[in-house]
Image (cartoon, each protein chain N blue to C red):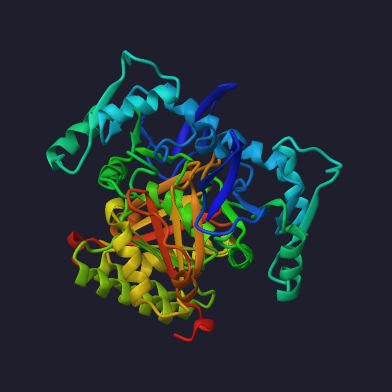
Length: 262
Length: 262
């Protein structure tokens, strides 16, 4: 694909520019803060600058999007700014309408916390944007999964993220054992999350079900002043004071290493 | 664990503080820029501020660490700053020496590009720091893997990262087919990388080996002005101009969805 760059001495100068046809549609993927984290430590200034130029935002919840924009210095009444709500209730037809509305514009997609497309309905609309040859620009910001992984000290060359474990106790225990066996077989770090009010159950199940030398990392309140990240094997965890996890956003990781005699 | 916070009216005030015993040792995980990216769009100011306070750095390469510090406003001759080189040649004994040297201090671990602990020897020393009850603090910054994943529009609820695919052509093709089959079975996004000078081979193998409706995302030069991110199915990719990938840092993702008739 070639784009006309300039006309010089009556010659047309073309320049190789992109894989494909250009549209003037760009969608920026805007990471949100993790809870009440400090924006100064969570988002680069250049990202905040991009947010300030945008007039179209695809958001999970309009109220929290307004809160985020205020943190970025975009102030009420948000004149000239359009919000398009995208949540699990948004129909396929509504998604197409949103895409139509932002075509030809620079727009942003904003998650409730962390990166859009990770644990929210954003991925679908990003996929649709690709089909329409939008330019997709991911912006740097906090991802609790990635920060938990690097802070665990576990294998970062090969890992899997599994989202939420099953709520049902029997299925949850089955899944924990499956992940432990998978890590023993492959050496991959196994990362997962839980609804914060059920964190304690998941934690107790892991301590009860996993083998003594399996490594277990608990990363709570990442990027918050109350952040706590601890990695230890199950035997060591069992000797320690049980951490207060209920209601605190937490990322869990398991790793079975060759030294752990699985 | 309780920490004495202050003495007030002759009462000692304690406050619940941490899961475990406190040491005065903290290790910050410092993300580096991806190539010659703009620091303003890659790192939060708060992260740069932390870097400026540190006197101990565990680094993969001292020369590039100095370059990074200069970008953060820490200027030569780097007086009072200690660098400890940690690379694939660092022995286990040397790692223990490094840990000993940084005990009792605030220190930083810095990768060549992106997040420490992901595709570098950092994870081991972070694990050792946990064993010694260091406080481990991951800092926000660019991760090409995570940015590629969110920009792909693929499944962000469940994904696996596999690191580098095999250099041998036959093994590489076997691995590609294995990853495609795995995604068909589980719906997980499969993410992987290649040494930049071999990107073209990997790209061609994927186009030749994967099924027509398998989704394939190519994310090049993330956070750089030349960034290009395209997701399409194999059939669409085959119709398109072959992108110039050789020598450009690229993250590849595959996804087989239920609609792709695998």
